[in-house]
Length: 414
Image (cartoon, rainbow, N blue to C red; front, side, top):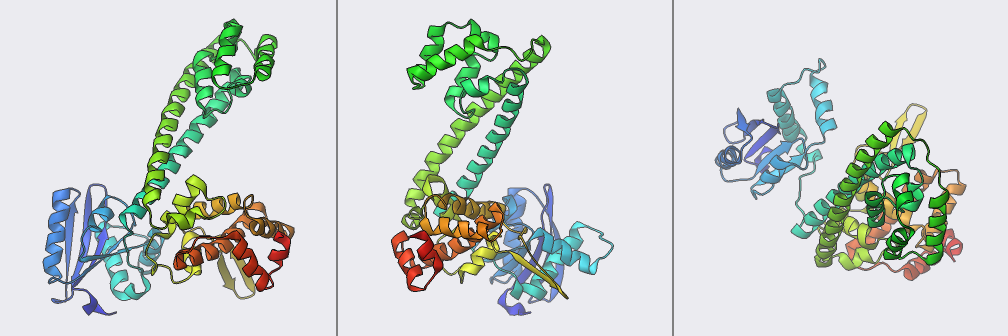
């Protein structure tokens, strides 16, 4: 424990209404406790007091989160060094000295303060990324949340249509499309489209660029279609729900499109955009996510293994006596792990060596997702090397490098 690195140490237990801080004044060798209301004025006033307690030096703050209103507010002060603590680590540390599992805000703050003072060398301080990277990270995460919300609405819409109008799943098209939304707004039931003039239906499909042959086939199917049932209460309730789900899907699709425009504009300004855009299959969605995962601070990750473990792609080894188990790493940023997993999956169809590596893993008996995670682990090494050296990826050069090293992948990818 090297106390003179900081003028004060703080364990901050945050809450929705108020926060509890345990402060250790290094100069006075004294602990104080403070309850801070969750208002901008109260929080900034407390930070000003911390500056005086720290005697103008740096102040270390342990807090059980890495994002949120309080964390974001504190990260704006240059004299504060924030140490985000994993909630599971904080809980386990607290339980080690309090087996009864009693929990109280002051006790939690004291526990965080003790972790920081006694084990600070094992904790990783927070280093803020540049503004462009932070924007990309927030925008891509929010976009994915909107996509997940839309998926939930599409699933509910699918279930309702199956219950009374299953033909719409074929005639409307993809349920996230504008065509599907307009189709269900015009003809929410089988009776509605049967009553429609063939010329109206034909004009609708022409507007959405369908061939005359496919339109004729659909019109023929409409004429011969039979209702699943004619239980009017079920149909009435279902139509209400379908209209509600369609409105939600329309709004979410418009928002997702706007997010994608903003992500593209932000990514174009990112200094490492050419690097991540060069990877096979990265595309408009995954390239910005890869850039957000790595950031621009080249000192953050000493090696590719740091990124592999942080993202959860690297497995965890559990060894006890004669038992040795290798399992998936669950404690990790889920969106980051998802990013590398999805990139590896897409790369299988774009990269010769990635496809050969995936097939090799499957032949060894690995499940599909195990094989993709193993490929993602391999890709992180390549991504890290290109990012560290500020060079774009070149598939041809990488295959030549594999051949020089005698890797069997070079022959398999040929």
